[in-house]
Length: 165
Image (tube, rainbow, N blue to C red; front, side):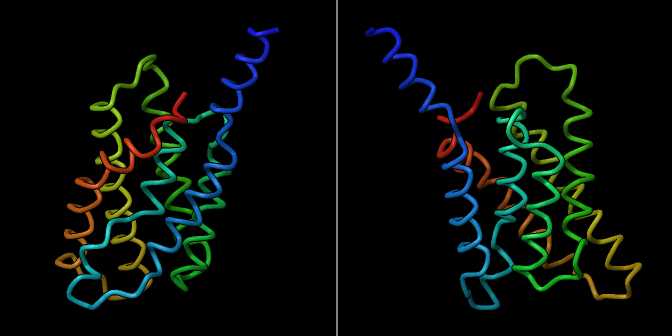
């Protein structure tokens, strides 16, 4: 009886659905919270980093469809062309899952390096897409979010690592 109760409590700790929803709500607040123009360029890419965390650390719960939904949600939050972030999140998620399929153990440093390259790939994709659409894309402004996203990754990881598989 005691072991069954312990197993059910362990299962409840590892069920990440509530935590996923709460983390999405918190990140969406952080994304749209108004900041001054000088500071706004340093805002990390919270939604992308959260998507990468859940895709890398909870692959049974979050996959390409999760990335698509997060991208659409990000498009709606940013008032971006519908599907632009969704397409980029799906491509980044697919590439990330494709390149880590051989790895059995993902350590913190491996995940940090993978997330850093994924964030860089996202910014390059957004640069190419916005240049093709004829929208002005400032490289000078986006390197700041790249830097802060890479530096903020350990904080996000350690806040959510309890629900990692």
